[in-house]
Length: 171
Length: 227
Figure (cartoon, each protein chain N blue to C red):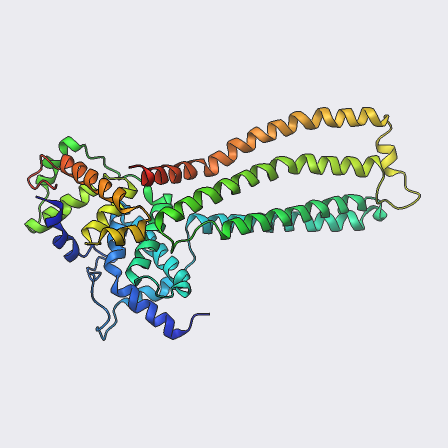
């Protein structure tokens, strides 16, 4: 039985890390409805697992594990986007969109490119962008650090290729 | 532009909260905020039921159990009470099958309880899911294939040996005037192809239910392991 105090602590902690959850949903779902469903599912799973959280790992590490496990295992969230974007057409289409600023444009381009990665690659890229060390990535994903480095180099190449003709190529 | 230079933009970005249109979901707010904005939106979610794959499987299993209870209990009572209790052997046969179903339910339920460990590392959770799901489907295949032959053999034994019927009743005997070997052969001839057909049907059905999911999990695991 979880007390009200624990519930308040839980909500405070999740609220602190809400941005991470939104980013996971943004990466693993293509539609707003799917994002809502995944966000709800992650919060439910976090709440269910919370009594077992003893603080051995950092809260963020624990949260990443549950969020990524939930997102990766749930195939309902793997629906493809309704419109397929050909890689060759990517730069042109992106330039057609009105952006509020350069940063926003880069971010949009980044999300578009990441959406084309596999589920595992998405998780790795997200942790890399969140500035997690390879040790932390290993703690979350369970992939040995050497393997993670190799994979990360491969992902960089992949992203570079995807965006090579864009105005802001990512490498 | 290098991926590393996008880290700052990424960290500062606050993806829109799904469905709300608000952009309050940035990384570091909430703790010192007196208004405590997350509480109102998060609290109702804690009361919601999971819609994940394991939760759905658990729910389906419960529905299966409920259907068996709803179908079996009236039948058991009917054959126990009606026909002056002459067909109570059928009640007993149904009761035995019901008992077997309880064992089936227990085994499946235990497998579902160990199917995932969401707070574990992603790779170990995937490996656990693949292993448990394979066990689950193997058990499902075995149970759903043998249920009808078991029921048929049980019914045959009850009728053939005239088990569990009241004295001075010839109801079973009159149903089966042919020699015992003839009856047994007919039963077997019907049962073997039916069981084989059921096996292939179940393989197809279980693959339709879980095949894609298992394949996807295996692909993810393979991708994680490859260098």
